[in-house]
Image (tube, rainbow, N blue to C red; front, side, top):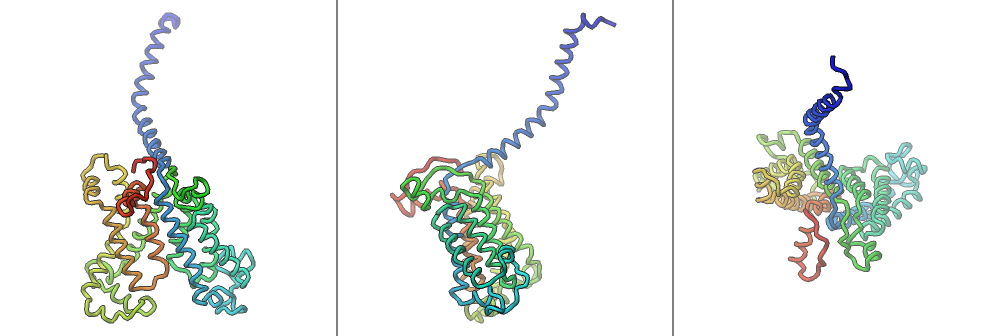
Length: 357
């Protein structure tokens, strides 16, 4: 056997070659993992002007304000939110709201205090005053009032609550806000903010529509059935806003509306796909190129707007449509919104810091 001292260099050379060979085998996986992590970091660290988030903030602030105020405006707050001992229609030994329960139950003073604070928080959110704090205050008061009586809660309460939570995480008062006016002396501020809350808003829309569509598994909704769902909904006094007996004369149109509504909802995931294709439009791929050529995202938004306008005109579903449409702004990059503003309102926009959609 050769003496180790005489073969040290050769052994080191062989070891170095072996290490290099092993590195070559391991390196692709390591590079792929690092590449994937770097891409996620890039997505989460991407920054852009807060225009879309600000418009969503304004819309949701107004929706939350009206959702709380309308109960008092209609004179229903004592009936719905007070215990029977104070004029309500039921006992609240166990409240549906943990905050109300923790504060002693839904007595009139507490409900009034939650209303005042909730309205103040919602107004501050719409105006853009301490955006995250006002979003949190509005959210907690809204949740407390919405679920003090579980009989009066609706699915739109979940939608509004989820959207408000996202505004708690977002710097939505960076622009189009009183905060921007205080900081810069102008109502607009192009300083970039993290964009991922905007992506999550679009994701919330996709989840909302898709889950709604997949829950409508019945012969009245699905293709191949009679597609009579919307016709029968329009005949129910608890839903319709007006006399809709005339719908019988255009029954085939209600069938078409039923089919297209269901397909739109089931395809809610296309909101996220269209947004992704738009952000990666320089990459190859026929499907990506087709989606961007026909502007799938704008078609989805356009159909959604028509859908919600039709729902609002014909049905009473609370603030659902207003809340959903408020989130549509997040489907567009701030540069696109600025370009739209220049076309609609020439000479009234300031050039913002460039950022890639």
